Image 1 (cartoon, rainbow, N blue to C red):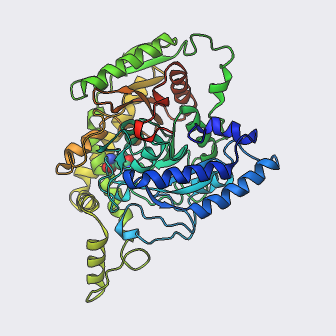
Image 2 (cartoon, protein in one colour):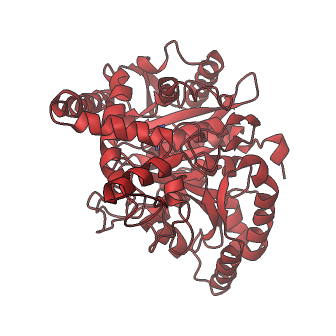
Image 3 (cartoon, rainbow, N blue to C red):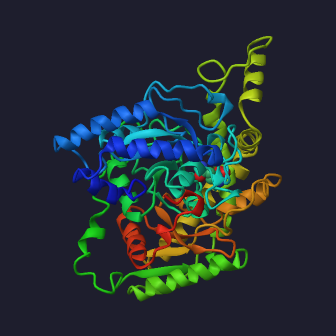
Length: 494
Ligand code: GLN
């Protein structure tokens, strides 16, 4: 029971068939047993979790509970949690305890969720394999010689191994969806601005998006219900009426019949179905599309002629913003400070040389270069112009379809060390996820099969801005017709 989905656990908790203290205790034991192998958690807060669980049980008894009250949760370690260490996967913040909590952390705590710990991640969320973490890589629960994906690899692996039912992540170029695909779980990237970025350690401010991991699309919807909302402390946070992201999941449950997706037009971009995607993935995606057709959807071919530029555009814009955001780590205000130095300049240099890993330094160098005088117009400005063209492509496509479907990643989980010598090869793993960070639109990755080696495959469903409820519904209907999301890696079966 303790390894069930959020929705199932919520029913059990509210019916008092299970207490939050039992649930949290049981999962903390699973974490203790599994973490040496997986390295998914950087911090585990047993005492704090059990205190919160006790409070949740009281709230349930008092009948003031929300659907998330008493449910254990893990935060990606880029999300600040007052009183609990936040490392961002970096030596720079190895011992950093934030003075305040992120907006999304506050909202999930207000809903009564029980924070069990913080998950491992690529340093400053830069990476696609979690191998850039100062604290070592996360291992994939399906095969521990493989990566879990990145940068939110710890959250994805924790869900896959059933160590927690719910986790947060951040997605700047695919860091929720790509590890969700490689680890065989669901990962939702909401529309930019729907969840406040307040209290996330910033990587690339125009792209960073907090979101949710779970076993099911329904669980992601439940989490988003609590995480969304306006926040005056983030100037890009949107002030929109509150939505129930589960509404479509319930709405047509009664009268859905055999064709719950009747009327839905699925766009299939020709750019997502070319060479370069592993054949087992292409096959699984075809099968998933056939399943969606059997549920009533129709498909239409669309084209995104500029989408191939997503990767180069992203690798100009995101390092540019990162170089500016990471200037604050100077050894003066917080985090690591070099123990020995001559003068102030030397202190900055030594602190940053010691505190940052190779990938972070690479991004800072690229970022300062593309922003420098004489190169700004050629690189940064040009990238922003192409970003607009990519967004226009999607707008054109959405005139003839409601959602866009394709693979989340061109490969399944690769072996640890396989791509660490070749950054461009690593960057290419995000080829399908980056576009919607550039446009701000939402997308979800859900499990849709396995390759010949038994590694999970992810299906990406993208929608236009604010189409969360719709893409969640498509994912949910698919999950009602299939059981890929219920598979658990053998070594972590309950
Ligand atoms: N893998 C991409 C990168 O390295 C995306 C990271 C992210 O979404 N945080 O930048």
